[in-house]
Image (cartoon, rainbow, N blue to C red):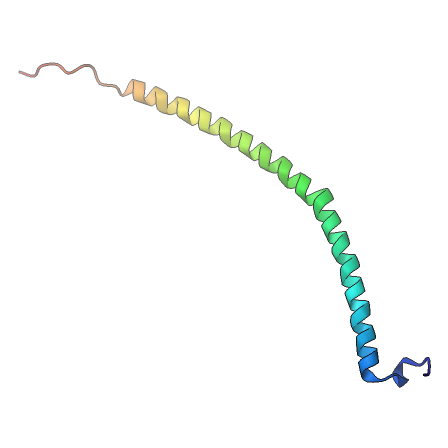
Amino acid sequence: MSSDPKNRPFDERFNSAIHEATNRIDRESEKLIAYLNDEVVPAVREHSSRGLRIAADKLAKFADFMDQQSGANASPPDEKKP
């Protein structure tokens, strides 16, 4: 067989191209997974936990506000109406 790629049969060239593409996809997938694990996941965890802490603080303040409002709106004991 000649070393000129144009002289090889189509299916051989096609298989070679698919093999090269598959190898490149595998390498790029490994890079993507490493990036997600090393960069994205830690950032999401950090921001998520910070968000939860802020939400918990706001909810605690809102609960305090509701307690104050229910105390301010409490009516005096029932008095007998004439």
